[in-house]
Image (cartoon, rainbow, N blue to C red; front, side, top):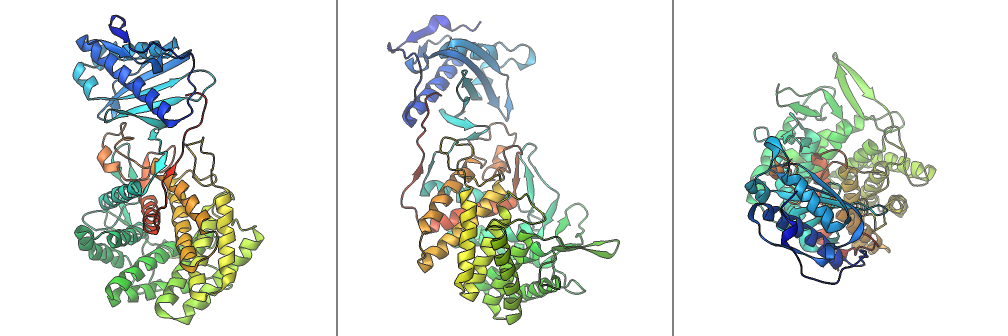
Length: 534
């Protein structure tokens, strides 16, 4: 048994028989008192220093407590305690850790340098957990630190963290970008992809607009050259972009996806707008002309062509995402060039979206995704917004707003469910939710610029989405279980179950953050915790 009991000093005499928290201050006090008590117990085991017992943790109930010290990304052991009094369960849990036998027995230095994870619960109440960070107890939901407050300074900090992550996601030799980082083993995949490189460069351009960065300015032409090197210069698929490049073999695949080409057009046009370098406009024209060739007789989109044994295999399933990407690309090309071919092709796709929206009650379905997935509808919103900008036709504005309204109806709005509060529908991925937030921010900016009604509805939804995205981002506080935490920080965690970062999730996240940051924030978003038990 741990050498503790004789050192307990009860400093406060009023002992509560139950915990009934009605405000954040009480919750914070309980967590911090619990952490400091456990930390003092552990120290006292080695030094014999007396331990003070805070009244806040002298709570009655059938408590279960576990204590796990983490050091260098791994646990040193776990101790568990059970008692009708919370503080006694903590004593037993800390004792269990320190009495671990064999090679895993933690010494004083290891305990001192570790971070304590403490879980505590009692029957009939929700489970609670905290992680020690810089001497404070941070509330955990799953393995992420709960975010209950969002303000302008926090958004700026997340923007800077995302920038640093994106620069780490670039292959230094090719200047192309990886798709996936696996946080548990600290590695990127072994390919660089055109679409993720284009998306990353698009975000880096926005980041450099926000705050000039000499390193980004130096890298922009290098990344752009990689992207241009992936474009076909001749042949039947002239203008299309190879999907990816193997870093092991140096070979490009022969898969040509309209989404890759479309999103690359977005970036090429932004490069041309900033530099007036005709190479970028010429590459965008060639890409757009290939998109015009990837259509069925009715004007709908052929998603991709892949060469198998030298023969083309076309994917003709209907996709709202690919259709939306093409519509946005052609709309932006018309805005840049006034070429009527792009407008006419975009008109067909926009009208198709309008008809499908009416048929699907403004929540779009297709052949690719679950009928509950909001991403297909979000691409309808984004692309119709782009087409509205070049057509000036309010019909498309009304359709896109109704579609966005259907998406936002599916937002999780229960502030007592902080794990999910702010995310959209069934989607638990940061890439999808980040994209929907980016789309909402683009609609909001246009809404404000053109003085539509109901703009604040979009901003309120954005703030809730941003809170959820921030919560599901790797930070110093929540990477206690990773061997290489510095490499993950700033990356948006792929999902509740996968410790990975997709580069597009970071791009969408930071684009939405920048749009919100630039729009101004009248007041912080804060959610006070309301519950009867811890």
